[in-house]
Length: 432
Image 1 (cartoon, rainbow, N blue to C red):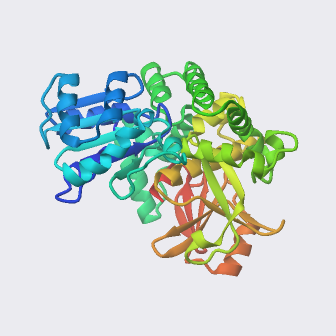
Image 2 (cartoon, rainbow, N blue to C red):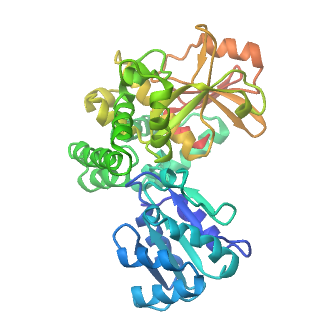
Image 3 (cartoon, rainbow, N blue to C red):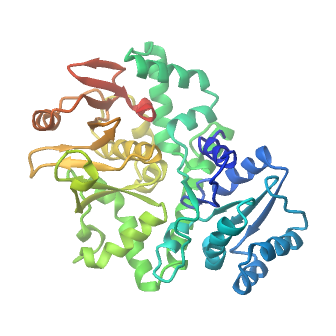
């Protein structure tokens, strides 16, 4: 599978100066280990890989020494190959299991920057946000790896030409030919079911069938639940699971703002705040915060007490919600309102992968705009619609109040630009 993060890894390797050890964040089974191995095979003569979760010998060595020269000598004996600066990639997987290894990165950066080091971990974000954790601030680079976006999914299905046509039409605001538009919409609906986690995508690609996909997704969800029990205190893990399991119910409401009482009767921010942070740091959920005002820069006008929670992968949401594959695949204007929640989750996932901050705007009961982007010096409202019915009073209220440069409306309609509204088909959200 072609992943966009590979280009970023290559850029890191080829940096002429200032390269630091690299941390790759991302949820479990998002493909971190696989892509780093592929990157090593492409760009290095060999890889010195150690799994810190399973290799107790290496973990115990770090407890005694974090001198780079001694560590490299020890690793050479452990992996039974020479480690040559610039030719060998040192890869510490599941590095959150060895805090001293992360501390050692500071000394590699300061005293042995010639060595190329990449670290990854499924719960790396959780680990480094612990109070007792010593994090090498200012001495590491970082990348976040997300599930495959829809463009990467198309590439996995050998639809390179369709990708190019979608991008061309987006830039030109010209409608795709009707046949290509319908084909892209059908593939988009398949993506809502499969999602972007590599194993479900591989299962669908190999079988050409959606039938085995939920079983693969269920294994991923079970792994997430196991992590919640393994890497959190018992009392906290109960809250984490309750918050996570409530997400489909939260998104089914007309007002999708996260309500603690839906996770547990009598639930409050004091009870569930740390649990939501855990899910966010683990890369399992996406947090979309309400804006009080849509002024530049939008990040300073957020109301941190009001937010929505989306799942990091739309396919996992589809599976977890129990909505039928037939309902998702139907091409008509549907009565199933939960499809709107799935569509919003899909767009949130796209924007997160493009490193947009996730924000929405709402007034007291009058209007709500799904997403607000700070893009190219402008503040752009984004409205998301499941089908072709696109009238929105909320957008009109926002436009009157803030006079945006233009508006983006994502729906099943074809490309176009009219009345200061840029129409973007659902399948083209990755172009924004």
